[in-house]
Length: 185
Image 1 (cartoon, rainbow, N blue to C red):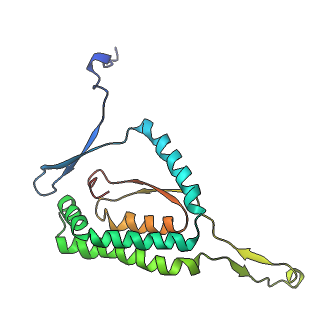
Image 2 (tube, one colour; image 1 turned 45 degrees about the vertical axis):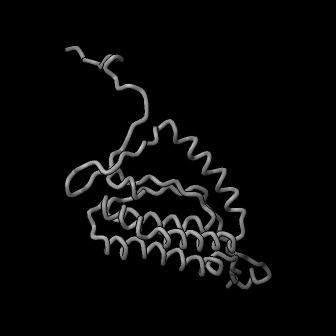
Image 3 (tube, one colour; image 1 turned 180 degrees about the vertical axis):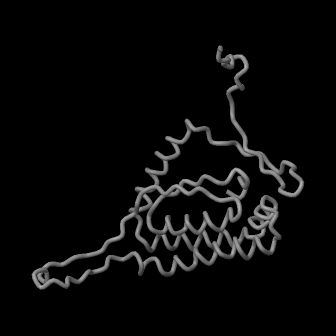
């Protein structure tokens, strides 16, 4: 039995691939987004590595100030963000606002105020008498690049709250949005 292989002539033409955002109610195409080809991933991760080193070198107070600017930008664009979430997920607009946008706003504000205390070096006491002359510290160091794969059901709140926590800690983030909600991503 011979195995049939597609010829090069029948292969799809090289060029950008697209992901379509569909209205969950009608199935109509809302928008098309260019997909990142697999061969583009190394460059994305290299850029993230470079950016992360610079970002992690910034003082925590600077990163928290940037988080507050992100919070303000999300607040200013809250209507548009809620519209995209509602259009792609089929959620009522009020749910998109309350369960997604406000959660992300609250997380940014919460961590901007608490991260400096939570991430500062902490002295660790020794309980062993032989070690009393020694000193120890607990220090938080960034991991580097955090990859986040977004779900379709909470396409803004879940990845945004995870990104906020990762970024304030000095990490870079690479996000892979759900193929069902690419516009929200």
